[in-house]
Length: 186
Image (cartoon, rainbow, N blue to C red; front, top):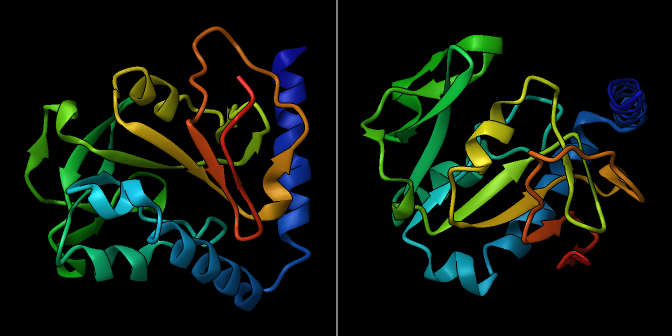
C-alpha cells in the first residue's frame, strides 16, 4: 500500500512538472538558489553537499560552478547501491555515470563530519520535512550517515500536505522552494 501511494505521488509530481516550461523551471531555480545563498548557514559553511541536477530538478549546475571557487562542493556518485561523495573540481572533471547523471571524479570524501550543510533534492517534501525520493533509496542510506544540517530543495508544486514515510526516512531540517522556506513541524 505504501509503495503504491509513493508511486502515485511520484506520477502526480511528474505530471505537474510537465505543466511548466524549461524556462520557467530555470527561473524558479535561480530564484530559489539566490535566496538560499543568503541563508546564514550557507554563508558560514565551508563544505557543502549538493547534487548535480537532472533536467527536471532544481537546476544547480551554474550555482555549483559559482560557489566552487570559494567553498568545497561535494557531489554524490552512484556506486552500486550506495552514494559515495566526491569533491567537485570543475565541469571538465565530470563524467556521465549511472542514470546519465554527471558525476565528479575528484577526491573521495570519507569523513562526513566535514560537511557543514547538505542541500538535498527530492521528488516531493511535506510540512514535516519528509522527503519522497525517486524510489531507489540512495539518499535514504546516505542521510542516516550525515550529521550536517539538511535543507531539502524543490519547486513550489513539489510541496505536498503529506508524504507516506517509513521508519528509515530522515526528515529535513528545512525545506525550500522558490516561493517559500520553512522549518518543519516535527
